[in-house]
Structure formats: C-alpha cells, structure tokens
Image 1 (tube, helix red, strand yellow):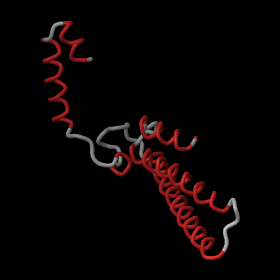
Image 2 (spheres, one colour):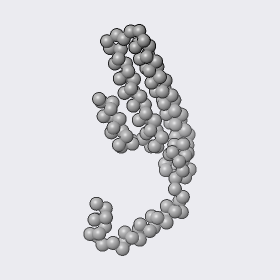
Image 3 (spheres, rainbow, N blue to C red):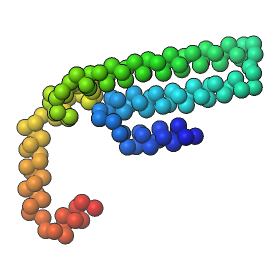
Image 4 (cartoon, rainbow, N blue to C red):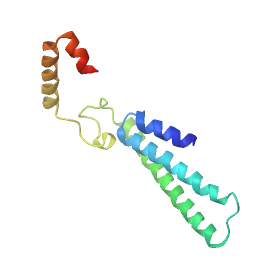
Length: 130
C-alpha cells in the first residue's frame, strides 16, 4: 500500500529533472509492487507446478527491475556528463524524451502572450489565471 501511494504521488508530481528518469523510477516502483505481490504467494509455502510458475514470474519481474535500474544508471551518468542548461536545445534528447520547441517559435509565442497580457485589465487577467 505504501509503495502504491508513493507511486501515485510520484507519477502526479514527477520530481526528477527529466521525464525519462521519472518514467524509469515509476516503472521501478511498479515492478517492486509486482515483486512483493508475487513473493507473497510464497508465504504459505507453494509447491509443485504452482511454485514453478511463481518462481518464473518472480524471476521475470526481478529481471525487469534490474534492467530498469541499469537504464536509470545510464541516464544518470548521461545527465552528469551532459552539462547543457536544463530544458535547453543543448540537452540530450534521450533525457527529455524529445527535442524542445524551436526557440524562434517559442519566443514569438511568449511575445504574443505578453502583448495580450499587457492589454488586459487587472480583473480580466486575474479571471484568466483562475
């Protein structure tokens, strides 16, 4: 229950620097929940074919867990090596799950928003932000 609640909070907040690391961390937490659920099948000792199935499923989840840990380790090392500003065009696309928007288009949209915002009255601006 604790891991499931922390997973829900983590997926809602996305606390890490890059979306890819957030997804990998969420996957790891989900796999831990699966490993615990599968391991609970062994509490009353399983035997025979049932035990073989649970052992296979447990090994599969553990393998996925270690694979995700390896991916996360590689991403952390890449994030440490890559010294570009966070969210900039210089940041590695694997860390941000894609390239950022074109800076000229982004600057144009910010200028348009600024122009619209300066023409609004204080009350209209508050109503828009709500």
